[in-house]
Length: 356
Ligand SMILES: Nc1ncnc2c1ncn2[C@@H]1O[C@H](COP(=O)(O)OP(=O)(O)OP(=O)(O)O)[C@@H](O)[C@H]1O
Ligand SMILES: [Mg+2]
Image 1: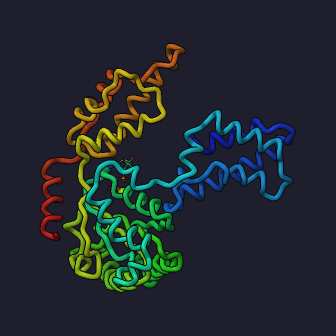
Image 2: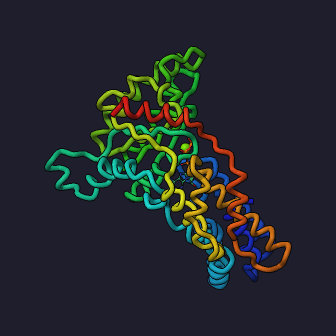
Image 3: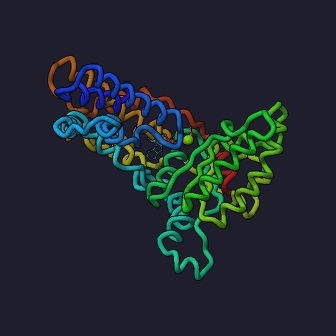
């Protein structure tokens, strides 16, 4: 169940004085808005304010419903405070634990010139250009890209390379041009291209021909983007497969490795996840983070989720609020399978060193 839809459903049911038919129609509208948000990757449903959905029926055509609105607002704040708080803001760089080098490089390249436009202009330093983020799955590449956009307060465009590729001549070109065009119109902005390894130089299959057409176009777009305030962030788990033509100066010429979180970063991820959950005072997050060496950021986050779920299950069984305790964390940590091998990590490190 989508938490937003759940919140909307509660609000709807609690609104008095409305015919059931009207309520049904408004719920259907909310469902449509959510479905659209979920299918468009540039607009994550978690970023959709509940207010937008509520607005879908309060303002949408029918007469405003002031008493209903009061009810709705209080239902949201009592029933689902997290939904409301999360919904009001995009991730920022502060939500990314660790990865200090990556955050600093993005700040230098984009945030600083944006914050000091006149000075940056005197030095002819322009926000934008191409940056490649590489690292194993679940290390925070997408999060850091969204965080940079949230931090700068600029529009964020997102596409996966396989979504752009199309076997019909012309279609791929159109999609790429339209994506970069929209990003340029909204500049300063961030354009995030995921799964860049699809653009491997040695693809044999049918897609090979499309890719050979796409790479030069992308090179052209990158050169224009650099001068027009668009930061093009690309991400890949397999940087060694990316066509080297894309990595030359003036293209994706900044290469940043997004690796595993260190002890402090793992502790930070856990702390953020437990911020407004009933965590026992007996839990030492440093100790818990110590159990998770070698885990990705996503795996550390998953441990927190599993521990909370277990404590919740116990609360349902006992009928009392059970705090999340050291045993919940230890059990969750023991159940996590580490997806990144030392060899994979070493290969990413080698790639970064060779590009530095
Ligand atoms: N450094 C981090 N700080 C905080 N949370 C993190 C971090 N790394 C990962 N996470 C958590 O893991 C989730 C998944 O991370 P994300 O989607 O950014 O990984 P990714 O590197 O893009 O993976 P993939 O290569 O599979 O696309 C994040 O939404 C976040 O909850
Ligand atoms: Mg990702």
